[in-house]
Amino acid sequence: MFTLNLNGTGVGGASVTTITVNWGDGKSDNLSGTSTIATHTYSTVGTYNVTVTATDNDGLTTVKSLSVTAAAPPPGPDLTMILEIILPIIVVVAIVALLLRRRQKKNLTPMPQPKK
Image 1 (cartoon, rainbow, N blue to C red):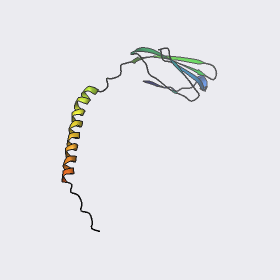
Image 2: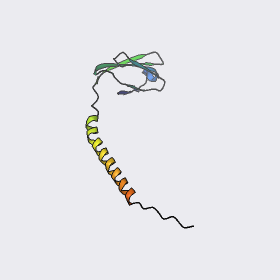
Image 3: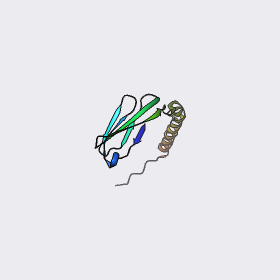
Image 4: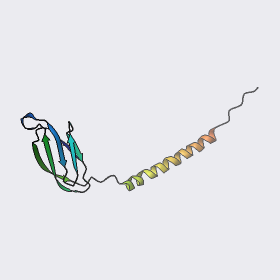
């Protein structure tokens, strides 16, 4: 995910009224008012030309471009390996718990009932 933090003023101190971010993949965001942060996630790995267009309240426009490269995300954990490690541990713990429970049942002696 790419995040742009934008700030600036118009020529002669004029206020920026709109900012358009063209992400270079056919998608764009329009920011207005005090919004100055734009985020975008690319669906395809590649290099993109991002263009930011700012317009101030006098109608003057400034355009800036930059090139960004979207890389493939790092691989996630190997769930097969995790299951191969954790599953046997869970089975052993379950067997030990079962054996301990049986042992406790054998060691329990009924409490004598009070005489009436």
